[in-house]
Image (cartoon, rainbow, N blue to C red; front, side, top):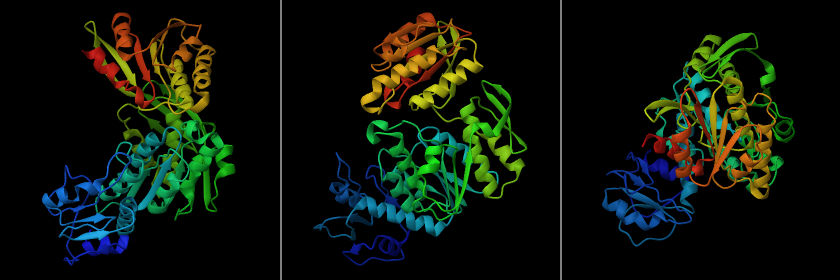
Length: 440
């Protein structure tokens, strides 16, 4: 951006004169700042980027934002709040690029949905998407600034931990199309009820420009969302599943046949939002079909890897990016339906509030009552809360371990082909260490 654009976007108060037409790159990190960059110091509970303004200038920054008067002989832009300034700059660039903005949220599956939507839209448009899980305010800003100048579509993932957070993202993203994959119990410990979670998710339409809202066919979403544009609702009931296997799905939707190179009914359901988005943006059926077939799961989301246990390769499906009661249930449903020989390693689910023990016990009872549960399967829990899962299971062999190290030692001595090993837990459990432990 040009210096004058920084001033225009933030209404910042300049302390010295500078070439207003000078082009600069925004940097928020003095560790990676380069000569000619413009420093934007962010603040958090345990850090204050303004303490490093002089360091940024010494490394060649041409100026810096600040919130307080500084006795520094340099070009400074004084603003009330640097995060707000960052959001204002991102909004300025969003409007300068003027892409179609597709915003995606949901209690679970929002990253998969974002990836599916981007994969489809890339068949027609130059599409840029939120990297990994950069779905908060800072991640939104980074995404907008990383987007190439010729981007025609931005697919933005929006996460939240409380009320007001998605509304803030919507305010500065100004989406054209919004998607809610689902409303579950993730973050219920913070928000208290599914109704409050629905309110938080439905904030995504608050500053929407476009007239299309796409969502899972959930009565709670329908009751909560305040939107006067077109509403498109979808569910698994809308499709005819033609073929299913561990790594393939084929289904018919609205008279057309689509395929995915992943299994699981929930992936089919997430794909419906991508199909509807593609249709609204003028893609042909063939383009949508091609985009869906090109989708590949990202790290820790149904990620297939092989580990060496006692000289033999054991297939592992790592889906440990995150976990909540709903995603856990569709996880086990998929395994029980598509696999014959399996062992499950389940970890703690986080942020479930005062009923966290009950949610874990309920999952164990859900597993125990599944008629297609392989009685020869092994179900292992690792952690603290997860013990309540295996304590409720009586229909197959179960084991509980307090630590990953203990669990890895058991797996090394008790798992061998053709068994497939499945991992599922909240991210805080760091289940990727199970894979590295087995490979040691």
